[in-house]
Length: 299
Image 1 (spheres, rainbow, N blue to C red):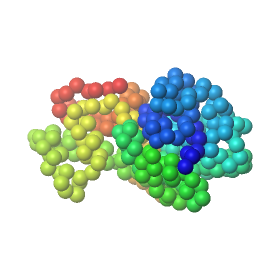
Image 2: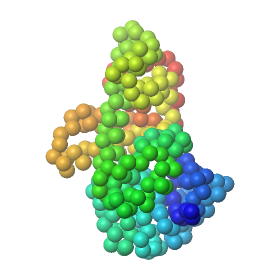
Image 3: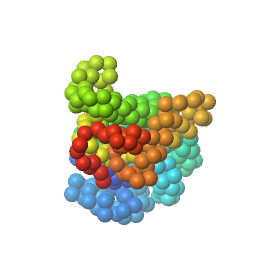
Image 4: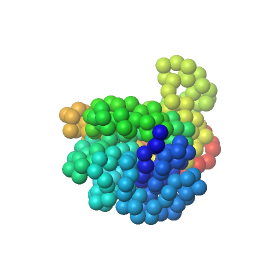
């Protein structure tokens, strides 16, 4: 079976391993990034780098974008539209607002193209392993075309019409952001109250408090390793998008509002740190209290 030509836009922390997996799976792959050198670095995988966006998307059956934020996605779509063939399927895997996803779909549909919003969770490790959780908003026909490509990258799940993928991602990030901060509170309390925080973490991993966040980010906090997977600035963007969605839906989310304020306190000076740096925000609220003695590993 001949695989469709894919244009992959955005070769960042997540995009690089995702594009690499598609190339290794045999997809005819074109890659583009605003910084052309990042796309050029994928030539060795068999991908075809393009310095010009129009050259990357022209004739591609499927376009995949994973970019910094909604406004960037919108600009790239506008710039690419003149080169898109009718019927092109655009899969946006960035984290944006639901209203932005709906606007992207409208722009593309007006040009005779189709759209799936398919944000991801799982971080760089999940991208490298092809184990991302992928939440897709699309109609049934478009999802059926997107699903084989998405399965190369992880485990896709259709969650509703266009825009629903972003809602699902926001729900995911709501839980992740809150849990990171609660794990930080638990470990700092253990240390301050005289218990061994590493032992406490091990003890509670077998109970109802067990979670992927406790496993991965709890260990990061104990090691004070804040080199980025997910970044503070990205988590803060997601937190603000969650609150915007809640406002539009007429829902009050008090815990999410508090978590957002925590990330705002560290976004100015350590924006590129891993979002496990919620621990640092907590320590700044508690002068003289600190988890462990290791030096902070920061980008």
